[in-house]
Structure formats: C-alpha cells, structure tokens
Amino acid sequence: MKSKAAVKRIIETLKGIYPEGLCSLQYKKDYELLFAVRLSAQCTDQRVNQVTPALYARFPTLRSFAEADPKEVGEYIHSCGFYNGKARDIVLCAQRLLSDFGGKVPGTMEELTSLPGVGRKTANLILGDVYQQPAYVCDTHCIRITGRLGLTDGSKDPIQVERQLREVLPPKESSDFCHRMVLFGRDTCTARSPKCQDCPLVKDCAAAKAAK
Image 1 (cartoon, rainbow, N blue to C red):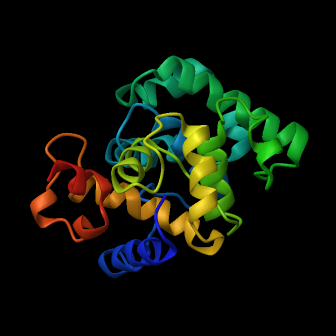
Image 2: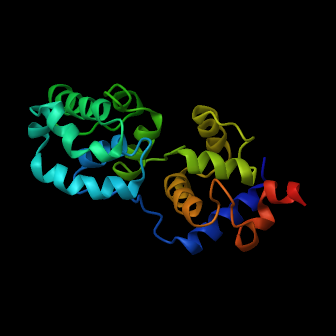
Image 3: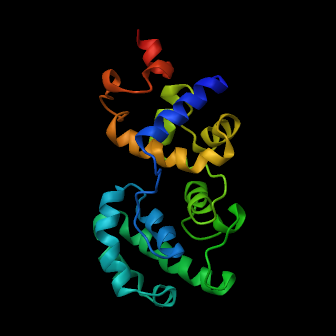
C-alpha cells in the first residue's frame, strides 16, 4: 500500500486539476440523482444527462414516477440501455420512497441498498453527495485507477476496493476523490492507451514504475 505522503500527494494533485470534484450527473432533486445513477449503469453520464431533462419533465414529481407505467418510462430512457429493467427499478424505487421513507431519499447504507436497483456504489454516491458523509464510490474508473496507482491491490471486486480505500483515504476526502477518479479516468488514465507520458501522477503510480 502507498505511504501516507504518497496518498496525500495524489489527493492534492487531483485537487489542483479538478478543484470542485463534482458528480457529473445533473439533477435538482435528491431522488433525481438516485434515478440518474441507476440509468448510468452500462451507460455514460453524458448520455444520461441528455435523457433526464425530458424524463423529469414528463414525470415532474416522485408521485408521478410511482404511478408511471414502466413501459412509458422505458421509452424515455431507451438509449441508456437495459431500459426495461431500469424503468422497472425506477418506478418501484419511487413507490418504496413514498411508502417507506415519506418521499425522502434515506441516509443510511442499509436503507439505501434496500431500494430496488440500488447497490453499494449508488448508496455511497448518495451518502457523499446528498448527505456529505464519507463515501467510497467504486465505479469502473475508480477501480481501474486506484489499482494502477497502487492505492489498492488491483482487485476488480468493488467491495474489496471499497474496503481497501477506506484504509488509505481520509474520510473527509473520499467522496470528492472518487468523483475526481471519474474525471481523471476520462481525461488521462483511460482504460485503453492511458496517457502515461502526460500523467501528473506518474511519480506515484505503481503501474508506471512496474513498466520501466
């Protein structure tokens, strides 16, 4: 695992590149973020942001989602892929939010993961962005890059990666760090042909050192 000094350098370097460290999914209401994350599975955030304005205009309230026909929801999200399952989960999730949580997005891991279509990645994102709690959002970018850097042991298991990141990342930095991983993964540390020659983290990158 990385030294504390190396971890700090990585965190501060990424802060300098991406000062805001924001989620790239666009939303105005807490439940809209919850639904947008569900739509982002096997889909780009850019595509989700193109789809959601019309979706939220058609179903402007949580109640309207709860009463929606999943087939109609599916028509609005068709281009996100796996639209039948996503539409079903969104409608069922809206119903559960109303029936069990008073129409509010809950604020604990256990409650969030009890909702249809919500796993630990989604729950962590909600806890970090909505409730400003420590959050470790282990999406494909985070898993890939933290493994390359040596912040984790290279595991592809999200739960294992989350556990290892909890051991090395300061809790107050965790949520923004994971957002920066997404941005960095798109810009520099891509899945294929990463731009190692231009990488500002190369001095602390385990993969780059191993390649020499």
